[in-house]
Image (cartoon, rainbow, N blue to C red; front, side, top):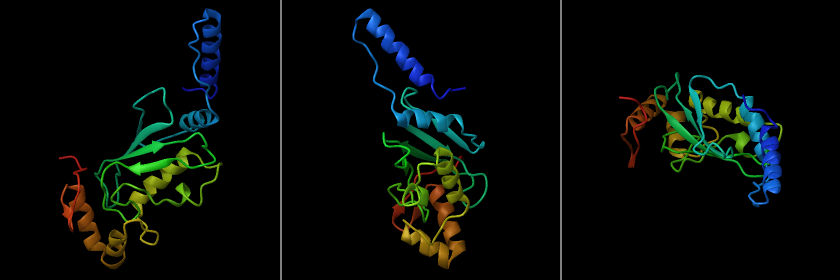
Length: 187
């Protein structure tokens, strides 16, 4: 298990060793954002439908989360989200984008996510777990009242059956209107 202060202690030890050897290979300081992210990650209790992936294990501020909904209209899909956390975290929310193109009222075709805690309702007391719960909830209950994809929102509001068909078609790699979607369901 990761310890909150292990990065700081490791950095201090490396600085001492570098100073003792005189080779000038001291590492960069650990930021408050890195310490907070490490704390948030150690407190995560992810369900089996979510997984984190760190392309560079030494960089906790850039990672991906895979969500595989096991219920709702998006059941069977596999959606990847990139997380980019800047050094002002937790005073600023993480930047979250869906990597795949998705037919969803709260995620636009460029992958931008409309989740209130990633915008105006963000507070430093919120953590990464709150963001992940919010993302998971978007797959269970898409919100047509606060859309980024207005076409999908209108479809959801006025013709739920057609919306459900469009979700299935898009997840299978088909077209919705003129938009081609990547297949996100297993064969």
